[in-house]
Length: 114
Image (cartoon, rainbow, N blue to C red; front, side, top):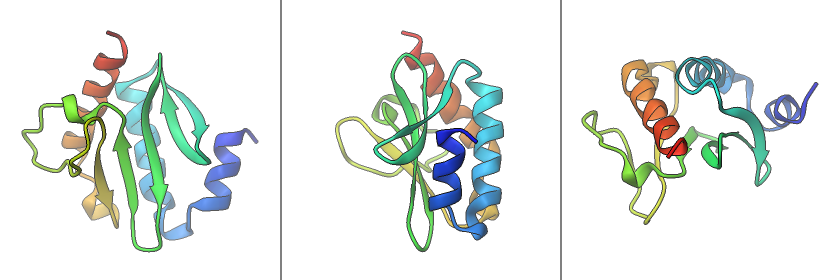
């Protein structure tokens, strides 16, 4: 078991596992160059630099994009006001908007390649 898997086992409650598995599939499809890593004690994906990270709370997962402030957001799902990051809160599988997440992950992958 690698570090990414160990962190998932330690930090992600069973209720949120299907969401994380869906995110893993989407990242593999949209950003195949991204490696599953652990950053700041959380599961994350890294290409040339940090691309996305999952933060776990009792009520939801936060799927944050390191350069999300640079994204186009026609879906209107990104939250945050910082200079760099934007995130999506995911409470259940019904919150997993696959077309929007594919778009965001693809944008993160393109920015990572620049």
